[in-house]
Length: 176
Image (cartoon, rainbow, N blue to C red; front, side):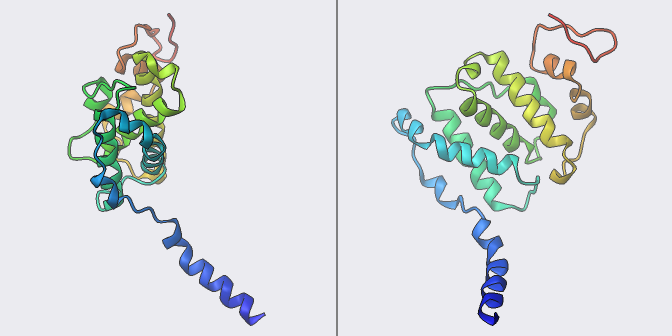
């Protein structure tokens, strides 16, 4: 009984450190030739999920490492094209770590929807939805700016990603 209690106590104490991610070594990866990026798709998706599933925190160095890896991977991959100047990026305060979250949503959408992601409109809309859901989750501690709040409506998402779908006067129904 005592041994079981000690094992249980040790497990509970060590659990957070086992779950902690260490992305510090990823900065050393060189994506030359560019095709090397294909071998790191799983790591890119892991980093994307880490950023999307953890609260926005400027002091989390692992988030910085994961974001840097995604940025380098996105620039190198010959398989996907990313628009770093789209309207969602304009919603994000440049001092915020939300830029990394948005990069993560782009990568997540591409790697989980490879065929759909070939269409830039699908990629922008799909990643914008993931991003706005991240922002709306109170556990992610995102300060909702007026720009983000405005974009939270489905029609605004479409407009934000330059969709050709016009919105009705009510602002809640989109049609083609």
